[in-house]
Image (cartoon, rainbow, N blue to C red; front, side, top):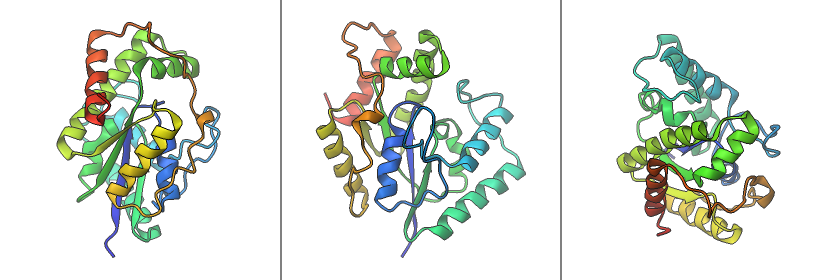
Length: 232
């Protein structure tokens, strides 16, 4: 049986951990990942090796997780580390394997060099809720958080346009979220697609945002994500 790579794409604080926990329950091999974090009691489901490598590649290009840049070069050593990570995950997997790190939206060219035909699934969340979360976790000013949300989610839209993958909306009510995720994972061909990992307590910053006026570009990008998701 041919092994298949699945990458979860999305902005920080936008449901990537929840979605990755679900695909792990569906049999996707993630390797050794964090199963508990200060701001996520079930862990962010990220590999320390993948996270560290993404940070190194970003730094080499003059960026960071909160300073998005175009990735145009990487070293032979970074390439070798990447290839070793991929080889380890493939060796562990019976069929599906993959990883998640929001930084992949910034470093994707680096990973695509080594991935022949990866599959993707994306997740997004209302920009104000993400901004609230980043402000609470990192003390990030709201204007900076909106700008960061925009940079990541414009990349998510570009990736979706290129590869045509499904998006899920982390803000959907619990029953709707479960149904949405299960349907889209089944479309990918994952077996026993369940949402047992999902826990409504994983969601923070759930206050209504009806009175929030977003920057024009942020609102337009959010509207496009909702259109792609099929919510409007």
